[in-house]
Length: 189
Image 1 (cartoon, rainbow, N blue to C red):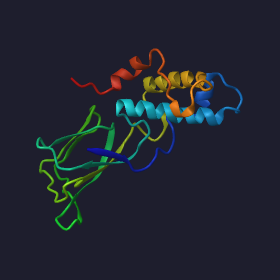
Image 2: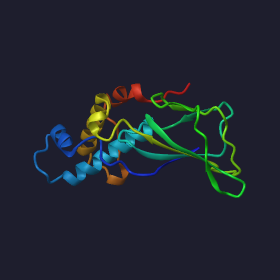
Image 3: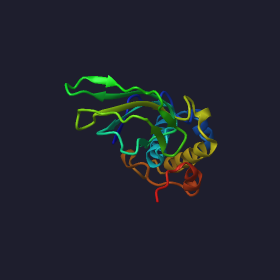
């Protein structure tokens, strides 16, 4: 199972003004650095939790439909499933009938139930599911505790900006970060 991002987010969950206010930075001299750090902390939070903060499109590639007919999708919250595509013996794509499918997009992980298993002739990546995931299109729709975690992380990375190379960021996570993110983290037993 592979998930590919089809388009980057149209914005970030934190604005430059919010970041500057939190960092108590009045001038614009470090705006480029702060903007890069906003992207870094968003990316880190999304990669470690499976969350998508700002809505965008993804494609999930599967070799075969799961035996249980319920598919767990590792990114969320999922807003919608656009298409489910399979491939016939000649390699031509066809869209699956999505009648009766049930999406539990708010679950962690999100789950998709399709009553009839999709058969594909392609051995690898024979099923493609295009979906949209995210809390919304702006940072205003991101839960407050996640925004607070982003701001705390941003402040720590900003403080480390001269000590740690940009390619080695994030250098660390601040105290309290894990508690803010914990309700949204996928737990495995």
